[in-house]
Image 1 (cartoon, helix red, strand yellow):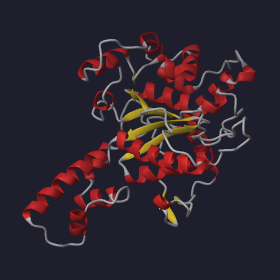
Image 2 (image 1 turned 30 degrees about the vertical axis):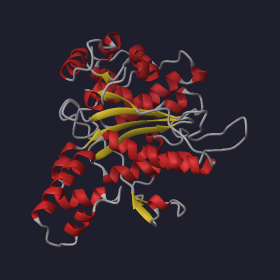
Image 3 (image 1 turned 90 degrees about the vertical axis):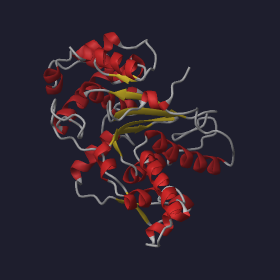
Length: 344
């Protein structure tokens, strides 16, 4: 039995969440259909462009992503402070970039006087829109609806494109965040479709590595003029969440590691899990594993099986049980052994 989103996503408990969505009916998000020989590779760009555009509108940041042949992974961060700082006009302006808004909101933005009934209606709308702008469910809805429409239009068909509602995992601490980001970034290497981080196309780690060579790349991206939903010459493209190195200090502000340490760890991990290098483990243990006290074998298991190790929550065992208890999302909690391995 599935659980309500309010039981699975709570920004007060943690701002970090791993989300996954998968296609149905042998639908291809990207890649090549071996039966027909038709390539859908260009659809990878649809996902990346759309999540960046939505991130600039929603109070939701992108920590990591990987776009695979029939599914994609995102690690998202709800920016609670940003949401609190939005003015009424900010909320209306952002929401009207997604939908048509409302005539009363347009009247307010134009500076026209509102009667009491209109003001009450506007206050209700703003409250509702404000909540949605920091909602992962609404972020995913806006993402998936557009991709489904574009794919169905291109395939000249109708019906469901996605398997169902997205799956999510709450990441309760820095170890869970680190393990999940690594799991997402290493998807192509783990699947055997890439043999290095640089060749892992349409992943956040490839983007981060490329940005080291061109740190001043413009944030604006061109959008297809055939897409009526984003029929503008350019849209804002928000950068990935930055690494700040504040391990154990302020895990909710950004990604609490130094990028150099993350790069060292993911390079070491990628070499260890490559399909053509089974059993390889470098004797030089990366700095982050030493700092966190995580054993190499436990870490490599997590990098390969993170999604299966846990259910809807990842973190310290006591924190996972408490999250379950507070949100009334069942008594049974999965992943005790894995949690203890990552939280020695």
